[in-house]
Length: 446
Image (cartoon, rainbow, N blue to C red; front, side, top):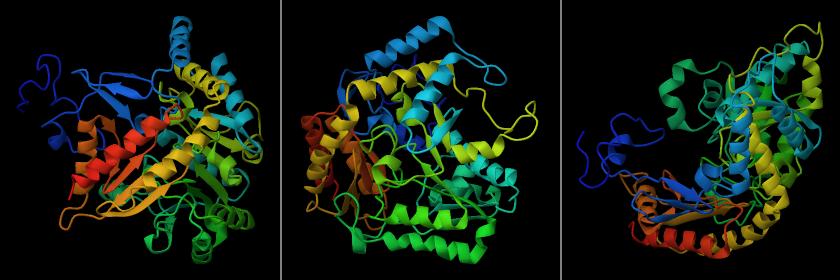
């Protein structure tokens, strides 16, 4: 394909070769947006422009970009060990990181299974849930319950329990059997412009009782939800909603899985959202912020009871036939250990809780801008939802995204919703700059 003159060095980059994920590739390659350096809260483009990162990379660089302590830890690890097999042999850093995560996870979530990404973590959690019931003699529990508008990665398990239509429709013939979905909790009639958790909507959790009555609890293995739905546009749980889900799951012997790939490691001002909400799941998935985005890493933390169910039978037999080549990769574990130290020693979660107040105030000041139909926020996450342009859904969102990029601010758009997720190291001035760029973008997208 032809390339715009002056946009790129044609000898260095082949735009045709790369198929970008979750991207309108044909439109993108007409005017590529590139970054080549990053530090702290900023990217730098090949032509030297600075871009304020309004989404912590992709909800992952919670300590900012290229934090020196994390970078040095990865460099030092590479000087010692590049890779270690995870099957029947392992390395000390993986055990150190697992112990550090178990010590910081809420309640009795104290056993860690490493994966390479959030998608792998979610599929791992689903497999553990199914295998747990089988190990206990309840193999009839084969159903998995997700939620409408939920996002649990792009593995076949994740898209089956996920509830985002565009992620599912091309793969409908390969969905897991027996999956059902709770009603989502986005209700603009009762919740629009809520600050933090909406007061209305705890009763939406009763939809799980409907599914229990429909399928019978003895067939349901697990319910998986994001404590706060990030990819669908920062959908915040109503007060009491997660507590009610926990009660129903407990009563019917159903495992509750929190997908904390986005909400973990400071996004909501704590190690995990479970801590903020005071709700104890049986299984938690994590990724993204565990290394502050420096090296890919994901995983699952399970309760003592879930882990113990597998630890029976002859010791020489494998308890769970599951794993990945890169489970607990040495570089990822080094990055993870350093990131946990940074979060703790620099009090970044306390900083996030302070910044939350400023972010809430700033985004809700957009309420009266043209076409704004909702503003949502929780922790260091916020969304501004726009009315779709008649006959051209998602175009307003795209135009606001492009406008912000040209103005020097990176945001995310999902359809006609603009999302912000600043890092814990953001300043008040940077929060205000993000929101003002969105304001200008909204005004420029009639």
